Image (tube, rainbow, N blue to C red; front, side):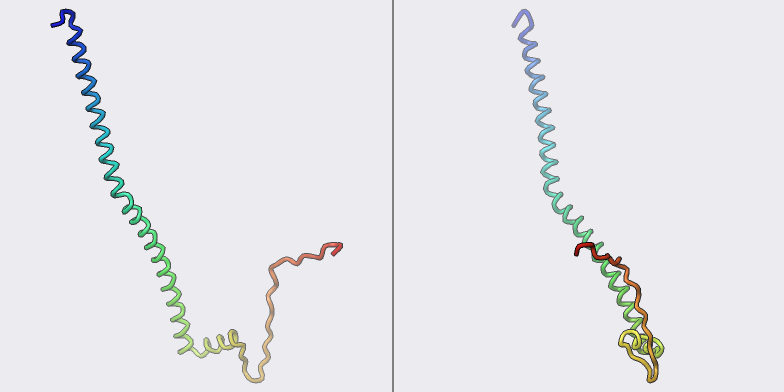
Length: 121
């Protein structure tokens, strides 16, 4: 035995260093396992989020198309059942008129500003 006790101190210091390294190794191993787990679940999760966004977009498009269908169905029903509506559509879209009738059409103003010609052109 060492009378000064330094050998025992050195052995304890080495044991403490190994304990600390063992603890660091456990922490690193824990982090590596979590990263591995995350790497397995992250791509499917991203795909799930993309699919949800696509579903929302398609649902909005479906709602828009259903509204359009309802409007078109209403127009068809009116065309089949309402002679006044049919007459209005025939006059506006097909430019039909009754016998002896004169139609005056007023053009709307142009919203584009008219640019005067530059001098020298």
